[in-house]
Length: 316
Image 1: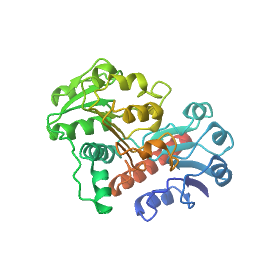
Image 2: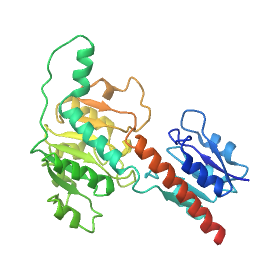
Image 3: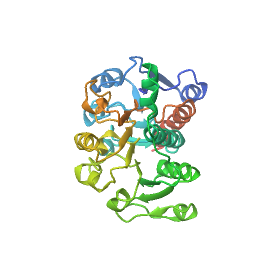
């Protein structure tokens, strides 16, 4: 029997639909039971014999992995970002790659809004102080009437925009690849022709772009200098988008009011990382898509995508 490797730790193994889909297709699932992200060598060791498909989370599907798996025909992403997959090498090896589009938009958008409130109202700091026995109030900021700048106008960015408009925020977006602006016109969302144009007017900036060579350290010393000192940065996309040294300096020197991230350049980060020492910095453990609803949608969609790719391969 052909086998399928399923690497995501959060993949709902007790959910019947993905298992039934695989069984009906004559495929045996192999789950990652390590409780952590798999290494390249571990993926190769498990998959070398008879694995025709991989459902992958953030585990590395590098050229080395792809080249060492002669039976592999398809890689299905459990989520959206493909920065952990060497898509170019997969294409060269005729291995199909597909993402679970539209499955975690709401969950990530809701977390972005949650982080916005958390950093604006200093919620983690206040909770920590209360638990230490202090009853000191910490001054925060309202979001009503403030401007949210969105970098990226894809599906998640649009979900964030809708929620921000519901909070009576002004929203402005920058996306150099935007072609259809009808959604933004309908919801009275301004469009900027430049990154600087968004950063300079925003009270909050939320990042919603993939990690690519073009977006690496998109937020750096120069772009941070465009922001108002009262601005807050939200990042639920990828850690590589932000130059963490520049962010630390901006927060330390009060050139930025605060930052809240769900991602980091190294996950998990070193416990002694200097950003973690700042009260003006919040970090959650890459939980944007980690809701019951999203993981179930991703599991079904990723399984359906994998079966579709394998069927297309079989049909030639």
